Image (cartoon, rainbow, N blue to C red; front, side):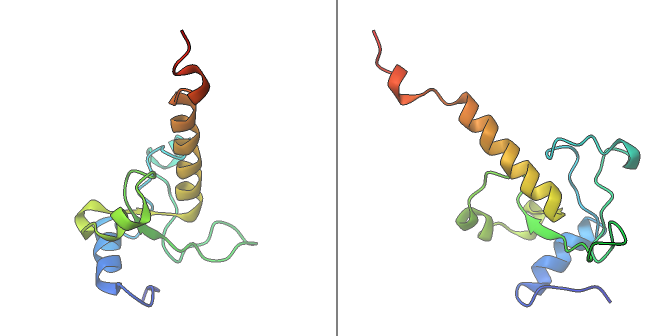
Amino acid sequence: MRSTPITAVSLFRAVMTAAEWRCQCTGACGQTHAKSDGRCPREHDGYVGKNSGPVRLTAAPPDPLTNDLQAAALPAGELRAWCPTCLTTARTRAHKTRAAGTPSPEGLFDL
């Protein structure tokens, strides 16, 4: 039996079953995941190494910039399984990319 969160168990199970209980990151985190056919190899309740605890996947939107309120309203079919490492790194990269593409307010009205 696999571990589940305390709430939204049916939603969590639907997302994890669709993902076959494996992280669905295909490179948003910056890794090519080349050794695992382009998809993160981490599995729910699996271990990364001897000195780490079990991996607990999270059901989250494919777009790491989706805010929490919007994410909470999404149905299971619009969520993906993410390992904590891929999700955190994907969010950081997305925020940096967005910040780099946003013009600075000082230069907006220069003539």
